[in-house]
Length: 116
Image 1: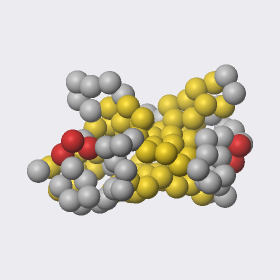
Image 2: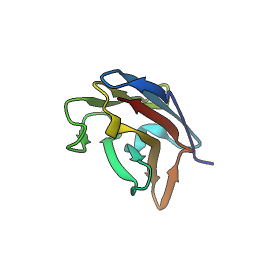
Image 3: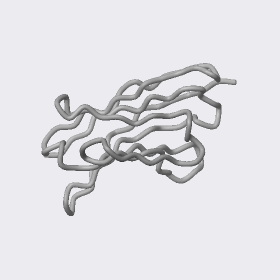
Image 4: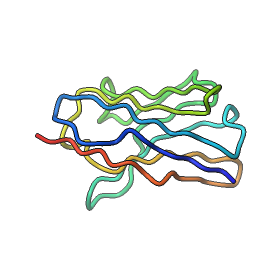
């Protein structure tokens, strides 16, 4: 079955960096776009970044433009989120997401905490 497993979260000081990874299995990874979402405490889940199936196109939430970079390695079936210049408002659980045809799959999430 389709599975997404995130890793790389943790505690970091404001201004620091983290790289999140999402390992995919159970589907033809190179065929599908991938996204990262996040959910801050008490807030709704929001889209952070997306990347097309071949990596040729990306888009970002305005709040992370210029600081975060989404990328993918189709040979490794992994999507990444490089997060630089982190701010306390970036704190939340980060989720990997894909839609394969009619099915939607979320990872279990990885917690990112940015201290001021």
